Length: 183
Image 1 (cartoon, rainbow, N blue to C red):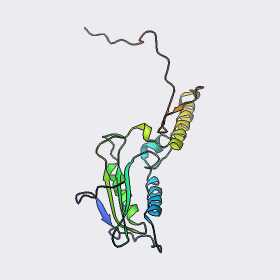
Image 2 (tube, helix red, strand yellow; image 1 turned 135 degrees about the vertical axis):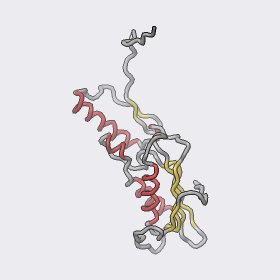
Image 3 (cartoon, helix red, strand yellow; image 1 turned 90 degrees about the vertical axis):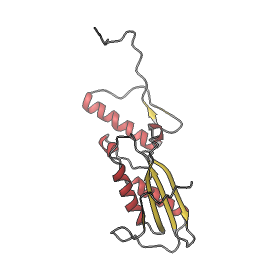
Image 4 (cartoon, rainbow, N blue to C red; image 1 turned 60 degrees about the vertical axis):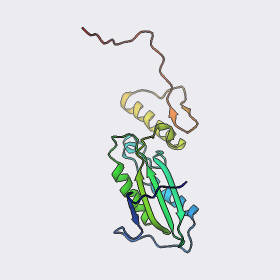
């Protein structure tokens, strides 16, 4: 994938961080660096996932909309990441981008790091990684039992193609239980 490296985007060159970069290795390929980038991004935990009882990183939550590692002419690598938020009112955008930019800039082989927010707000629960979706459903079931005394559903949850897990729908009611009366 190709990332947009606009001049107005938030970016930091290696060494622009107050902390020194990690020690360089002999030769880092774009593929190897991409694996390291994914690891670093997945260590940034979404606080809502932690509050749900199943902490997850940006990768597991499906919050990375674009990721690119491209070689420069001098052999160094350019990292470009775009992070989407779970909803437009999420206040974590700045924290996510700043933490990602700072952490990625310390990776050996990275010459330049750009981290932007995806303003399309296109995230939905279907983008959660399947393993994390199962872990989240288990945590929710444990909370339901502990807090509400509600046992786990007997019908297993079904997975969509993208890995999101949806609980079975409740049966339809014959008549509405509440009606709004207007004068």
